[in-house]
Length: 295
Image (cartoon, rainbow, N blue to C red; front, side, top):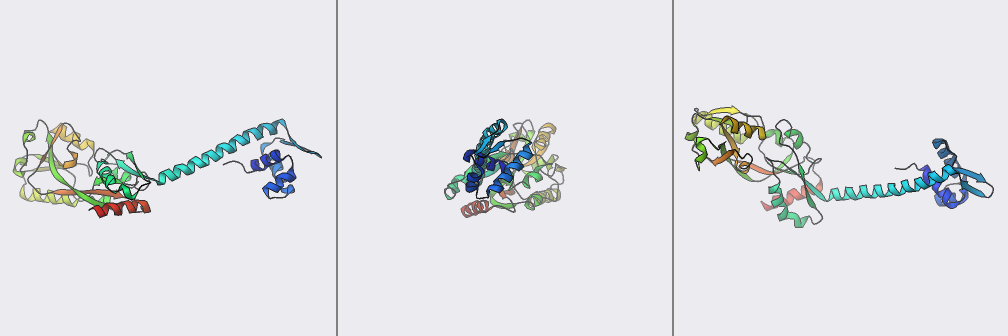
């Protein structure tokens, strides 16, 4: 981080001669003098006065000597801090967290396996649920964060990350609080006749495609409206504002205070689990393996 010629200059100033400085630098006295000449030419300053009795620093040399010592000390501290930060980074698992992909299941998992990682701690990294940007967030696994916990049967997501299933979330229906269905404890599919059901487009999620095909075949009176390919808060806002019904999951019951999520008379559910990079580090792979053993 510091011009290496300054180390030679300080050695000469501390030793009081080129010869003594050469001994501790393991180069010849001629080499020392050449380096001092190069430094003076670089700085365009006269730093050392030479005499038969030795050397002395000029006024400029005294200032450069003083500040160079400070710079070297600061440089050493900076490098040490950087190395310590790198070491700390190696001892942290970074977990992404958002409104629709909360970190709590990962925290619960951590307390079951952390004995195997005594030097590690968890660090939460927030990110935004944006249907236009979620794929770029997934692609930052291994860089921005080490893990996400999320619902995942998306083909697009699975092309970009490893996925370790940990469980399943029940598929539910969300409705505005003032909706006639909001007071029901459980919804039958026949209750949805004449309603407009909001759900993701066909083609990315096997579970959602199966639900869509089932409804289109057996309940054609239920209209289906495509949402963006991936949910974000705007989807829940639209449901609340339009009075339509929304296909949702059990872990999202508290996402929007204006909506009520209700179980449905079906057996549909969707997997959730641990997402991590396709090029994960050894420690991340070890964590995933420890989590896998719990299932």
